[in-house]
Image 1 (cartoon, rainbow, N blue to C red):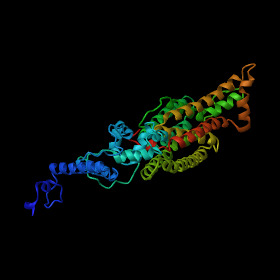
Image 2: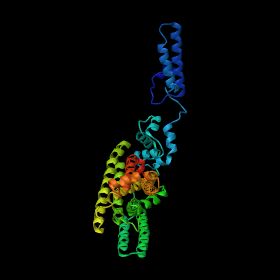
Image 3: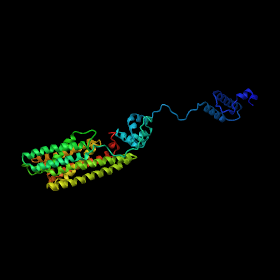
Image 4: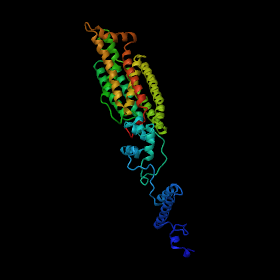
Length: 426
């Protein structure tokens, strides 16, 4: 049949009869026929250019020259730029919440995330995690993730946590068995031994600090413990016109605080483990914060209950009764909160509040002494009125208790952030 066709018919566009594809010459013929038809219609004026426009669109589609609507070249992707800045974080993250914690640690807030057209940091982290480029060939074989166990701690940390209490008990026994110069030597050596044991316990357990530390924290802590041992007796002697001779030493509160290192370490461990599990199961930063707040409050309450029991026991054993329990509870709460904040990467607030409590106790002693000078009775009047109404223990209760309250509010804000529990970010 093809042999009887004229040359024009042979060159015209027809339905292919073979399975072959259109070649370049066929496309040119089809385009020429469409253009010829549109010019004929325009000359005859029989109808509008609508059909011609459709044919032109078909020609453009055939030739592959149709432009894609809305296509832009060279645009800057802000999320990609952010991923490039935090490339290592995106590559090493195992879930979006880890990226969110890293972004939060680097100062990215929900307001910043709004600039990237996301409602919060977690939504931005989810996109970054989804878009993170990972080398599939070099990726390790995925295995089931082990249960979250919290930060790693040295084996046998509980034994180290018992050292301060054991050493302090031996120092108190040495004080009771000696007198005169021997008592002074035993007290000095006992204080040194307790300090070394406390240092070892804090470095080998859940209370160890891996990040930045403030050097003044140790000095303020030592001053507060010294006041718990000697301060109340000294203040009472000053207000009575003395002191005359050695003032009484309260060893039961200090022994209770030393024994409380073990429950403090246990509470810190439980808080770290439960926070890590909550972090792994959370689907948002707000959900994580809402779950960690009651956890922190519960751990803090458990520690205070354990400390109170230890103080009552040591007071009964040493014959001091309930004297000094209130100041010791306030001091223990302050020390625990300051240490937890330091462990989780916020050392400045703890050091500030420890220094403030130490300054308040020192100011009470100084104004009491200053009030004994002629014409300066007004200096010692506030402390004298406070001690007359509530006893000498009211000064450390107000100083340490007030500082502990401020730290508790601060901890509820800072330690409920995901960045406070992401070890790889700190």
